[in-house]
Length: 82
Image (cartoon, rainbow, N blue to C red):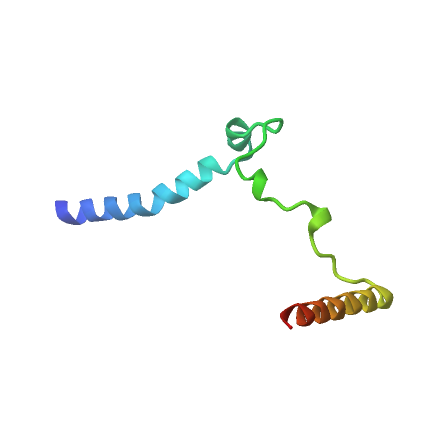
């Protein structure tokens, strides 16, 4: 009987420990305590600024410009190979 109870306890511990730790450490007030808003976070270097991200063309003219740019880049890369 004791063996069965210890297995149930271990199973509950294995399941509840990760869930409990995620619940505790992902709360906003705890996150603010670890990383205050005025202090940069550890992953701020990995965030790409929005100005450098590719923006999808919204109009036909923007699409044509992007196609022309791709064609120029393709021709340039072919010329460099020669």
